[in-house]
Length: 187
Image 1 (cartoon, rainbow, N blue to C red):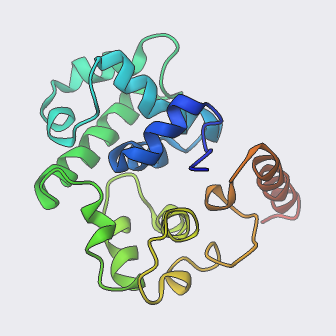
Image 2 (image 1 turned 60 degrees about the horizontal axis):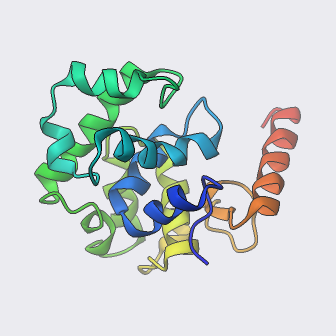
């Protein structure tokens, strides 16, 4: 059925076919609703009137890119800082992976290597990197040896902890409720 993170068919279709869009969506997934974050790459592509390309985004004038992010409705609550972070991500994908975002995970030797590669990307802290490893394993079949352990606890089968577990509207609401319950318990 494909990813259903944005809950918008066109945006989710882009996440399915474009690894860079998926990375950008994950970077944007902070301090805004996750559906909005994962719809962001589609809207960015629409505003630029072109497919997303790591080299192109890396080479853009930072102020012009920030202005694209700030167009109403803004792509993020903090459009300037997120435009900068996305541009840094794209620079790294362009420089280290020859512009091929899927190479970040396709060439990983094992779970720890995959986690290190993701954690090294701008906008990915330790927790976000583990969640992304879980997303890759659970929904995209990227399962090098040790991926579940590298994604711990997000790689756990049947869990409803994160974006890695969202497969439809119902699971989105279950993840949201589980996060709210964890916050209520000081977690």
